[in-house]
Amino acid sequence: MTKTLRECVADAEKQQVALGHFNVSDSEQLWSIFNAARTLDVPIVIGTSEGERSFIGVQQVAALVRSIRKEFDYPIYLNADHTYSFDKVKEVVDAGYDAIIFDGTKLPLEENIKITKQCVEYARSVNADILVEGEIGYIGSSSKLLDEIPEGAEITEENLTTDDDLKKYVSETGVDMVAPAVGNLHGMLKGGKNPNINIERIRSLREAGGVPLVLHGGSGIPDEDFTAGIKAGISTVHINTEIRLAYREGIQHALQENPDELAPYRFMKQGMKRVQDVVEKRLRLFNHLS
Image 1 (cartoon, rainbow, N blue to C red):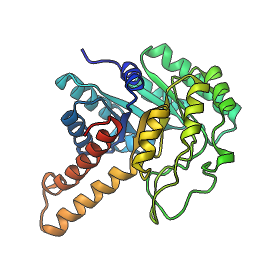
Image 2 (image 1 turned 180 degrees about the vertical axis):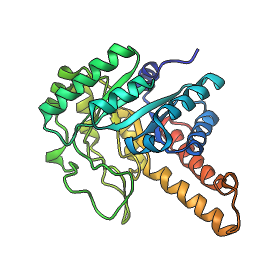
Image 3 (image 1 turned 90 degrees about the vertical axis):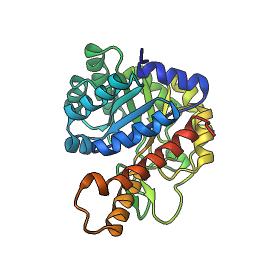
Image 4 (image 1 turned 30 degrees about the vertical axis):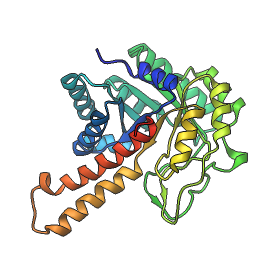
């Protein structure tokens, strides 16, 4: 019997490992990620942002993940990543997603709390097992290659999420998990590695909030920061830009090798292989596997 996502998160915390969360916008990426997880026999979370699920289909990706979970009796779960309104949250809850994220980071804290609480209450009324994640602290919004740090991204010491704000947010909303600003950044900087994350802040926030923490913007973060962050209290890590880049480069390489190829299932295989390789590498790191 497959565990619930809530149980997998609890297990990850006990074992001081982290669940890997990887975004998709088509079925090829989904299979690549699943195959990587199955190779290592670890749970996996599939994410779809508002843009990604409008492309692949809200109901369709939910059906795909459910069918894989049933056929293989495997702990694979679906999360509605970065959802910006109550109506969009309602849509994915009704579609049977295992988890949802309300992203109110551009709102004043009180407004963020108000809408997050509404999302939590609705999700609980539909499915007691669904995980609701909130966000506090703006870290940018695009999973892409960046020329510079996005304007307003809260990555400096004085702008990171505070213990008091996180404690207030959790107690007043009832969220299951929180994604804070701890120096992380959505996207990958073209000119070098992303800023280091604040490990001590992660440790402090986990204790103050009393709920599992999620690290967004994982692409571009150094391996040693992942390891230290997981030990300090991160239970789930989001990766997107890194696999988008691998997917595109694999397909480009295949078409350069054979420019006359017209069958998608042939020229997309290299993209799928590169995604699987990246995901497997990250899952080994997050789960302390050699």
